[in-house]
Length: 354
Ligand code: HEM
Image (cartoon, rainbow, N blue to C red; front, side, top):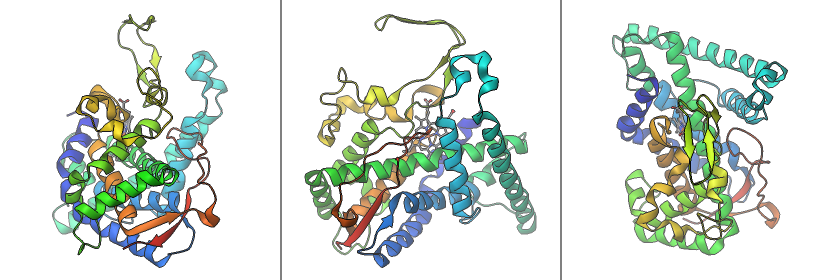
């Protein structure tokens, strides 16, 4: 079974069985916000930590495998280094000049050491208990012919690829909603209509009923694709793009610019505007979710990522109203990185709604 295929099957089949874990993490997160009503909260940091808690339980089977801050810091560093201009990508023989590569290698060594320690701890706990659990690591350890290196790479892929992408999407959605109060009001009205008044929070079972929220998520992913250049690919054979007038030779590194596609006026009317209504038509279904890539190497965490984005966003809007500190304009600066991070963390103030 292919490595990535293993993760895809895992997240597709098990995403539901971890719903209870996400619910518990959500409850804790909402309680933390309730204690901070009227105060400035670093939403970028808090949502990233929440996403990490959700990912860790699914991947490693335990909530606090790594200190959230250590791991988040390492993932951010990797994202930032990975997103820099790499001279070797453009002039391969000048790769030796790329100063980020040794730093990326050092970072990878740190990650692998952390993960190997955890694999060994998990193995001895399985040996003691006589059985494993339900996590991704448990599944990997139960498969034949999986080297520790492959297991480490898969776990690293799963947590690091899922962490900043999911948290970034939630941050940009909130930003757009604060910039568009009428869209925010419509989303909150939908929540009030769909969620029973007795419910303290939105559950995963409610998500399919929240059509307008779904359109907001898709529109956010179009305008702010969390992985703007996807993952680099290499052409296996010569390929002609007749209409565009390109010929791509075999063995060429190809970067697909989702950011440019999402803002192309030939595809989208008024692409810089945020209009969730444009996402309602069935006709657009394939284009709307291009943010997760295409084909065999498309994102295996799509199910989990979408579930987490919808769940967190729905609860943030259902339980709270939001404002910026001192009523300043919401910051829309974009940073540099493998994911479309913000230039500065998103700082917002929660106000009681429910
Ligand atoms: C909103 C959330 C997310 C977005 C927008 C996103 C987007 C993407 C994109 C565009 C790619 C490249 C696909 C391609 O080249 O065709 C990718 C790859 C990948 N994603 Fe995600 N992702 C998200 C969440 C997740 C989550 C939660 C996980 C893990 C549980 C994950 C794991 C991966 C992995 C392992 C790859 C590499 C796949 C490969 O190389 O074959 N992603 N993602």
